[in-house]
Image (cartoon, rainbow, N blue to C red; front, side, top):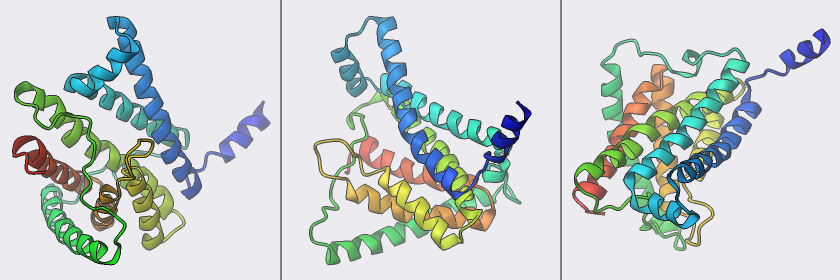
Length: 257
């Protein structure tokens, strides 16, 4: 059995290929895990299949459970793979910056840069590409006219959880794996394409959500710059939270979009 252990130990490689495979496979497996949690919850509460769908669309708390489940499985998959490869979370950017105030400082500056780039790129795309609708609305799974205590699970599910998990996975795990062999340009391009593709909202009857894909592609490059500049993903998490918080205000508080 020693020879088998020796072979397996040599395959424990955290490299660009394994980073891409684990990121994409983890995305789909975590969705399956989230659905499994909902099924178990429905059995426990006595819901039928129709009630599961209704609860998911009507109840922010059920949607929060699903979000927590999906992202929880995703983090578990990434952490398990890193542990298997004997790689620490610090090595993928989960470490403090040199000074604590770099986190809010870079996050705010990054949001300003993202905002300007988004306006410019969107204007260029609208002029140069006529068959892409950039006024599409992203389906968030929540009623934008929710109020009161219902806003709490929506805030957690949109502003807190996704920025933390998505930065750990993309600008942390995926980007770090790519940088082991590729330069910033290629690593950033692959990371940003995968990140943008995940926001196209595949599988529905509606057209692909190119507006969200372009927006997140631009955001990804700013996040990557912060990752390279600081060596940490915490400023990127901060910027991502600011961006999602502004969207939360626009959609759920002021109803301007």
